[in-house]
Image 1 (cartoon, rainbow, N blue to C red):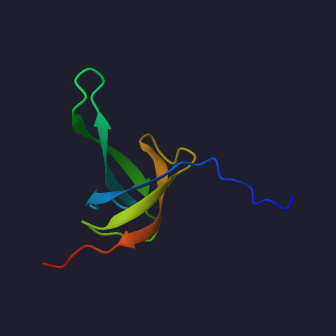
Image 2: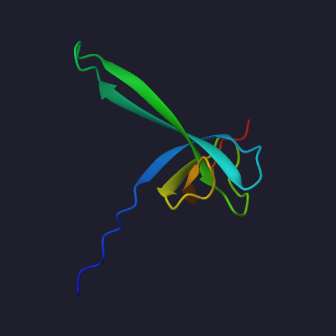
Length: 89
């Protein structure tokens, strides 16, 4: 067992679009995919609710989320780390 055990949990990086709820942030994940028929590159996006125990992530932050056990009806992800702080305007 010299090899490190590979994590089977998915991780995604996205932007916090809402931090209004207690211990929860909404993260927007954007990706670009090729249209099957026409071949054009189109943007797709998904919103995920992630658990934020300490409330440290704010609107506009780029964060990494990791898949976890179901925490509530809509929360299956946990915010793991801050990738980039939101720009102050």
